[in-house]
Length: 296
Image (cartoon, rainbow, N blue to C red; front, side):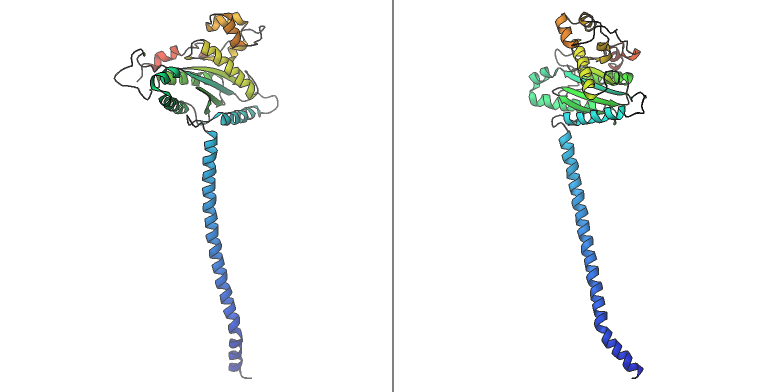
């Protein structure tokens, strides 16, 4: 058999195989293109679901009225930061952690004068203003009503006092939505808005090693600050060192031993009065306001 004949025979026999190979390659390219298209669609869907999840998480963790963190997020954050502060080598001192409980007073007059809707708008505006007065690593949220909680990681008493004084000054000087540059409203002190803040301070580990103990200590300190007229801060270390109910009444200026007993609770009468640092000796922020009030 001649060589040309063999070549022609092989070409005839291999033509179907070559066609099948070409068809298979075309099908594989189409499948790869379809797979890439489906993968791109799935990636887009995952991105959309991730964005919706983030929105839902943010919504579930935010207070709908003020826009700051809500009570649930505060509890989770406080538990996490307490555990982080206590996660040290055996025998080492835990990392400092401060807790501020802030109560805003004066909203009753705002609501009575402008209505509930305007009062809620003012509360939201003030909460947003307070949130910019702290570090990005700190957490501020609404604890309930006009009460807010501030978690300050890696912060001792001195740093907590500075933040408390700054928050008191911000509340006192915050411009309300109805603020008129022409002058103060009748009966309102010039440069003031009628709002004040009382702050209770608790520090880990001095005032408690768990979240519940810190919250209780901060709440008691807040009660003393509230009884003292507000616009000031009080530290839980003071309450732990009171020698009795009468001494508590003398310290906070409460008329009546019953009210002092209600504030101090079951405090130990045998401990000595604790001395705060020099930054905390002036509990009222009036001394600080004297320097701040000169500003705009």
